[in-house]
Amino acid sequence: MSELIVSLHDVAPSKAELCRRWVEILNERNIRATLLVVPGKWNGASLDTSPQFVDWLRGAEADGHEIALHGYHHIVDAKYRTTHRRQLAGTLFARGCEEFWHLPYAEAHRRIRLGRETLEGYGFCPKGFVAPGWLMSPETMKALRQSDLLYTTTHTHFIDLLHGVEEKIISLSQRPNSVLTKGGIAVNFMATEVMRYLRAPMRLAIHPNDLINARVRNANLSIIDRFVNRGYETMTYAEKHQSLSAKLSTPDPVHPE
Ligand SMILES: [Zn+2]
Image 1 (cartoon, rainbow, N blue to C red):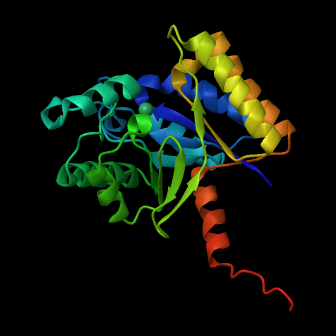
Image 2 (tube, helix red, strand yellow; image 1 turned 90 degrees about the vertical axis):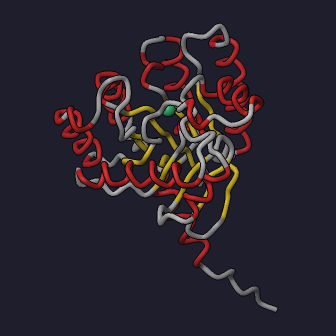
């Protein structure tokens, strides 16, 4: 069966109300999503100062959603900036959120560890890490490969860190509040129609602010509904990792002579 993985990015106390409404909408559709949580301080708020938000996260997990890591502070640190070319690419694709795009090994390792410890301190057990904007330095990838996290993702691939296997699954996301919004939605619509026809696996990345723009919100919901109606199975990233692991450990069937 073809797979649709829905992830809600930027899950953090500063976006609490929008996240809460998205999860409510997903629950109405029986969609279990991966909630990508920013564990450190971001937009002036942190988990430590937001006990109600942490309680809500626990409830979302109890509803079947997965809690995963989404960077640490979700903001680029000028201190670590590398080449001008990389700066331009980071700003273009992540608009200041490219926290892990320039990081050296030690700092990437430290932030991944801090993020895990923060979530574990609240009783969560994150299995995966998705960098803000999907942008990672080569050293971040190295730090992830040496961690015991199970997976990470890029814009185009799901990466099984445990088995060292990558699977191409395109991720689509809309861009609210941009001159590209209308055109982007039309392009995404065409792309999803082709993927749906081919029954290709798909990822949909939702952002809290998508809810504010009716056009973007409805485009996301329409993608989910059309794929589900086509018979796609929705799953979290952790479930995707589980099913990939099961496939990898199943020997190829022996064909009769
Ligand atoms: Zn993000």
